[in-house]
Length: 521
Image (tube, rainbow, N blue to C red):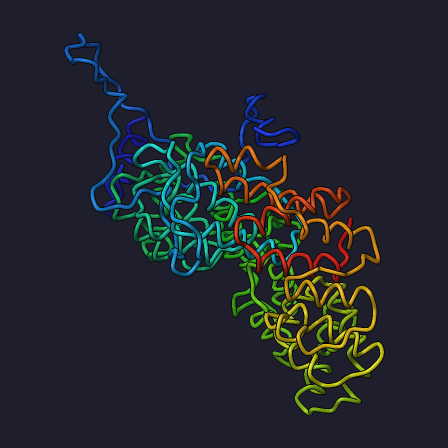
């Protein structure tokens, strides 16, 4: 007992460590008191702070209670109002959240919506990163909406954006720091966060986090002593003990069988497995872990595949994924190698201005892009050039559609001569008009209906009328995504709302992508 106590005192003194509407899922969840989803793979890096005890005293105040007082460090921004993109960049009104309740906004941000089209993703990112006033219902110091925005970025694998947002708030909030620490672990920038952890008395790291940071700082003796203390006090699980022991001295375990890999590792566990030479593949892990495969010490194939996964959610841009594709010539075939070969052949033909060669390789390149769902990122790189090459027949049709998926869609549409009803509709959408155009498919009719609508859709009107415009936009994004898998009325309503509130460019791009990409289920 005496040795355990001495070990505890020694470890604690080491290195300065401080001891609404119908069919609205959010409305339904609120009515049923369903808890909001959250990121369930965060590291247990900080001890749960205990609520301060208060002695029982007579109430000598006149109406005010301790619970009425909100404390926030001076000089720090209100988390719910923190953002990276000012209104001069986004064009959104500063009071976009209006009268929304923070819990309702948080639930809308955290709703899982897989397979969002790139235009819808782009608007979501704008809302996640926008610098806006906190909703009217937020208390001073509220972080409800902020944490939901960060969690959505993490679920999309957008760690660079999440890290930039987290760094704007300071490190005194434990829930914010947990996300910041894990983001740094997956990006490989954890040394800076270990220093922040050491220098912030308000934070109390758990034994695994403390041991990891001591070792990363080069204080191996302190890390070993802290591990021994955690063992003696029962604060370290058997699984963590085995992993930490190998992390601190892998030579002691040479020849031993590998450790059992956890099915759902935390970022801290993930990094320590990597450090002991037993890396955990990221293909079946949450998308945020794919960011760790983009580091320079990872093999090309793993980096390219991770880049594809992240590009599909908008976490990686077209130039970055093209940089991975064009790194060198593939030495194998199948899967990602075939996509790289097809796109490299197209890029070489475009660079040579060889229209015949472009026409020859474009269909295979387009098929490769469709397989990986990367049509839009590459269309934004090559679409304008392809549309201006005068290609004919199949290649000409593909070139026009890639041009309409690019940022120069309106310009390209103005100079195009479409020959099919669908291409005429697509060029009309790029220019913001559907007058006199016919619908060759039910999906095209849903788009036309959305563009012809003159009022806010009934299902979204209550949010708009209640000064909850930001919520209405988030709801429209969810409607578009779910509607694209079958309920065409939802597609129409989403487009109508986006146009009504002035998000015309997003409505045009989303409509074109919906019809061209044909991801309808």
